[in-house]
Image (cartoon, rainbow, N blue to C red; front, side, top):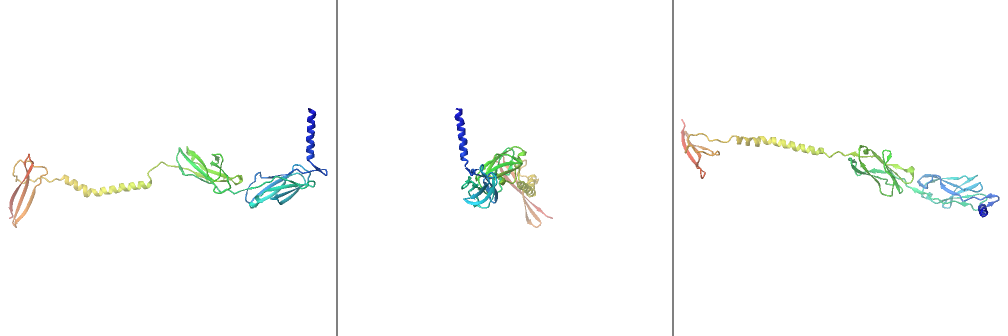
Length: 321
């Protein structure tokens, strides 16, 4: 059993040595690897990028050639197996095409090709806008904050902050705004809020302006309403002051000074009670220039049962000297 394992190990070593074809006593190159030095293929317009190409094994020196859509871009020679670095600038959409590199030495027929890479263009995001349906809040109230970048490659990742401390986890949105619901519990919850937006390229992250809630005061009478009520009270006082001399005082005097029955000495029936509203009429009629004729009308109650009122007229002529 041990003998068989030794034979199998020897066979594997021999197979590997066979794969490493030797030409003129030198080892052939392995297929090179092409990768971005910055670690991501997401780029923005006018960005500088670097691609690394190298073979892990083979006899140096090595010549590396970078291709874009099968068109040669650049060639670099290395005296050893260290990576070759190709610097590029993404100026247009055509610079996003497929890239490959080829490694070759004097002993490699046709060279060895790497894997292919393609860049993804990211549109820079615009500064996000942080907003809320209300700018005033009361303690014990829930409020909503919304964060949205109008422009930028999707998806966009948002996160909310209060001061410099994050108050939410990252949320990835495509076109909609990111939202967070806050509970206003104390005065400290009225601090400054912000949000950050990014779209896969961290150096392109942008922050919104600060947003502050103000404490909503209890509902009180507004100043215009107070002024209106004051004017109404003032007009009422003026009206009352004008009504006193024209209406109230004459009415009061009329009630206080009722007409009373004068004592004439002329009565038709003595000891007859007369009602309180008894009115005595007198009429003076001229007869002659030197005389006056006076009529006295006296109202009296004739019968208590049927409550009839009778009038007795007395006449007297007065002569003037």
